[in-house]
Image 1 (cartoon, helix red, strand yellow):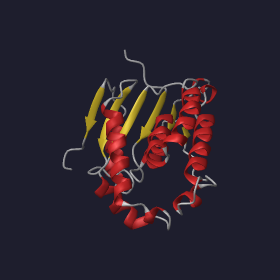
Image 2: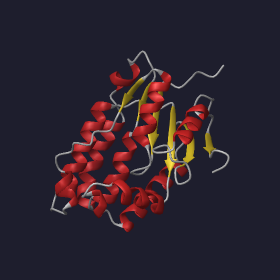
Image 3: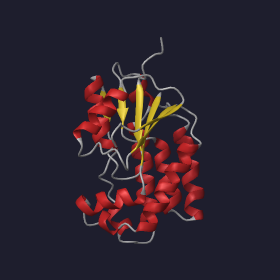
Length: 211
């Protein structure tokens, strides 16, 4: 009998439903959720393009995410843990936002932190398109997110797709988030929760019938 995953991570680009799915799955499993922090004090400066703000924001994210996903937070939990991010997500955005000199400094800290963290038993990748993300941003983005360029969205989608095309560290369920809307469609969310109650081996793909 295959052991049920203890540590599940939900990942994907922005506005694809990671937090909604992580919260629902944690409730479904009667587990504990770990949600990515959004109160980064340097974000507004980053969105305004102020010099050095990208590096400051990225380092604050890295340290905060490391603390949230520490080994004690995961392995000492007596119930399943569901996080709406992976530490690898931090590096994907660092490479989008930082220059070469900043990356050289960032990588030293990233490798040190990453080596101390447990790996997820299962990862759910909410795969999206730039067009589907833009559509959701147009509906409910705040003032700063609304300024995100199409080229930035395209870069983020490419980075996530490339990462998960080569990711072998855990079992992965790939969900077509361009066609499956766990944010606003209760049926899609219910179908995905049902799918996640089944074993996932290797990389599997999920798209509900009718979508």
